[in-house]
Length: 378
Ligand code: GLU
Image (cartoon, rainbow, N blue to C red; front, side, top):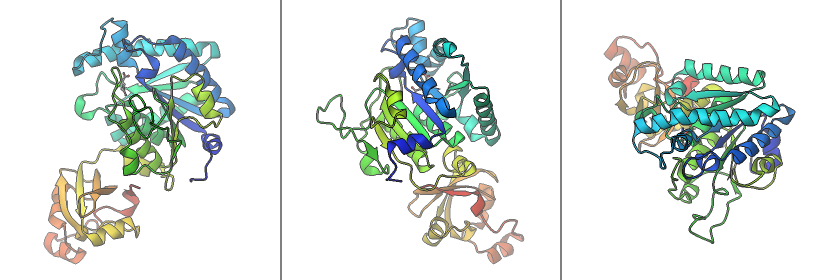
């Protein structure tokens, strides 16, 4: 993949997810920057030429709510944040629709929660709706459904949501627009020598260490959350470009193949839609810790996971739910759908098939997790 040029990345991206952060769209009091929205929308419309399908993941609802209600600063507790989101989401969509109308394009609001991604039926419904909106030539604009998301099940930030949407659509390119030029070797706001990293072939520890724990007054993102999102998207086969949404003409530059921002190259095979869901979208309900032999068999030899290789089971899960599959040290390297509930799995853990037959009297499934229902996470 390393030989991919920017032009290749853009040319191959027939579907693109573009995420715009609160800082790009609103000032520190939450007032929406209409000129910025107008300009981004125009570029976005241009980027759809040649039939490219574009989805916007837009933050800014809470910020815009703060602005519209004249609160001066962002509240801190969940109910007030949710109330701001409810007010601000209208302002945000209104601003987008006004910018899109001269182009004859309808804005289509989609509000999603983490549990919509967890539940495969709702996940597929969201996918069908977005694909149908493409047919109608609408612009899907996605945000988290903040009014119903509670702390434990929140995406927390729209970077993560955008990576999930890229997964949902198997989009070859995710663009994260923020208020810095990209990933730097230091924090550019504090360190004048910090240099922009143009290309990241693989997000490893040395890369994540570059991310300062940045947060902003109105948004919840920061470099760490962007890297987490980029990691999910690149591991599932998408390229990611992180760039400064406050720079004039940024999307034109990205789609023109110019070297702006940081390009994170996809690594590994592009996963199938189902494996993407399994590996990165559904929330695991428990974990299986394996011995070394089973770890090797699953990770390197493409085998199913048998009960005999499991040394520890944590969490409570039912048959058919998603579980984390971890090495001896407890580090997750795969996810899969379990054939046994946690209680049943505990009874057969560490046993070979003939022993299971003796102990339990029957062996409904030889595999604890069948290979077809398993995704190794790169
Ligand atoms: N859903 C939040 C909003 O629209 C944004 C979360 C974030 O800042 O990433 O305000």
